[in-house]
Length: 509
Image (tube, rainbow, N blue to C red; front, side, top):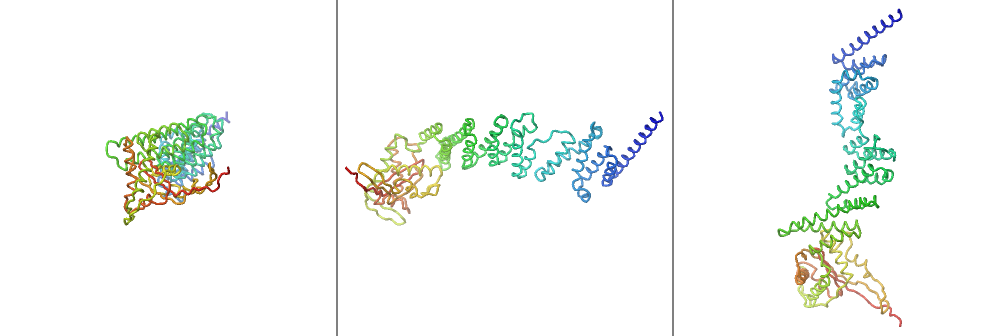
């Protein structure tokens, strides 16, 4: 009985000592002696780590310092983090959360203040924002930020290399056979999307390439990869000249060569783009069309050309081209091609036969010169260049690859080629060339051969009558022997050569 009485007395005295100690700490806090308060809290906790209330007093003292941190810069570098650190230790020791619940209102104020601070500095000081969020999560037992939260902060702050590093590490370290209950699962379904939404396309393609196979058995993660790819493609589709859209389309097909869903998505996006331009051009029919209106039709064809390179031999795209050609009469239709050749040849030879005045800065009379013949190789070259000029909206003799007309001639047999025929071996070469381009005249709206002939005559006459130009002299070059005219939309090409074709070895009988 005597022993029990002694123990009760000791407990009573300890309780008095604890109350007195805490009273002293609160007194320092209430008198705004925050530095001394923290120092006394540390001293008390060093002697009695179980004094949980001391962690709380220490925390609120630091919290007060945080409101005027410059005043206490010689004592503590970051009072808010020290406040949260103290509360985090308290949270780990206060198993029943008695102390934390007793001061719930104050802790809520600290929480709101800390969250506002983290939000404010999340891009300017990501490391501090991360530290605040981590401590808040441990104090209040809230759900931890997903595995992408810090990667998002890096992206928002423009630290794209760090963002990519975090995302890549997430995919590298997570197991392939991961279930939806895993804490990182949602982050894995969204990681690639985060890269796409922040225009980190090169990094995105690397992630898909490196981890597509690893997670091929997981529907959610695999779909996340595809969704990110589609975001990148749709983003690139807004690019003015569509070069990124073209590149990303090819990249998507490269990453998913056997996936019909991916191919279909990309194909449909191109078709929508082409059709949108054609629809917009149709809408301009109510007024006299200007060059701005013609850009819409040009874009429809240019996008169609790019799409056909992405999907060679695609039947849907071939049908669209046939429909556009027929509706807008961009090129001679199949049943008109022979007449077009005949009208073009007749128009040129009519001028060559009768002679004309050419204005090359001064008027020069050109006497009649020999007629010339049609050449199918030149026809192909002329049509290709006219098509390019229409798609790329230029009227230059040098193509988009920097090749001159002679460069393109030298890619054909006219560079100088020996060939066999029924007589033996012949040598053929283009010895001289005449080349000119034109624009502003099209077949749009014509419905008869007579109208087409008039358009062709108008283009050739324009070259002949053009002032301060060499085009008339080119059409009237005396010693050219073969020619072709190509056209696409409102772009035209006249191409003529002096074809040297001789028998060099007669076939033995």
